[in-house]
Length: 314
Image 1 (cartoon, rainbow, N blue to C red):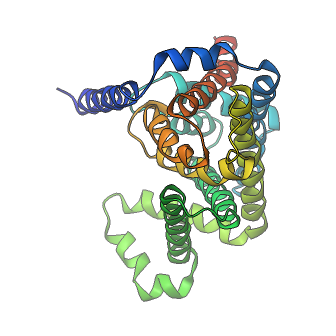
Image 2 (image 1 turned 135 degrees about the vertical axis):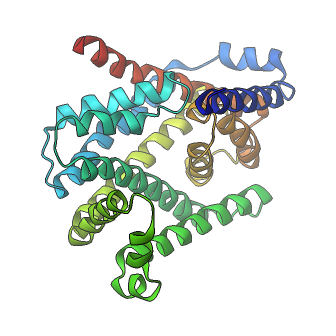
């Protein structure tokens, strides 16, 4: 049995177990009532907010490519971004959306290592912006529940880890102190690793670009999470604790952990975490699951634009 098949089987098993865990907690009669009484006005507005991920995200990736001397127009980058979203949503297995984006951009340049690293840095700035949004919101929220405390610890630790890794990569003194370049030279495929390292170090000379990318990431996540909040309103969540600030504080933890999940698009992980965390701001199991269901549907709708782009290419 090949390694790829084994990994896909593991993913399927984990996904099934998570799905079972969710199912046993649900009152399906309540769930059907919630979905039946959906208010379409905030739901449609929430769907439009979800588009920020691709529309603004394309510009973020484009400016990161420009720092590497890779100049593509916005609409080309937009097309590749939505194609990546399509593969990320519909294609299980090892082939993720970031890999597909890297394939497209490397076909258009001889500087392939730098091209691939723009996709990596784009993902990093995206997650970093998400953690910043969550950390700021959860600091402002003065809620003492165990769920909030756990989410706060996760976000703070994630940001601390990001700072430490950033210092290792970008500080000349720390690199010399830990013999970073010497270690890279001893690694297998050291030439490729060194090229990737140099591509990342390029951003040390483009701090303004990295700052812009993080700001764009913050704008994306503030908008997308507002869409998630609107989905809750569309589903009739009206408890006193349910607020945009509360959702803004908790959903980043859901998204960050889901991004590292082995299931396709983090399915099952995001739903389980939402049920657990959103309970602290007054949502029921059925409401939290319904919010994530609308979120998944919105992802599918926007990613279909990538499917159309693929069809047009053939």
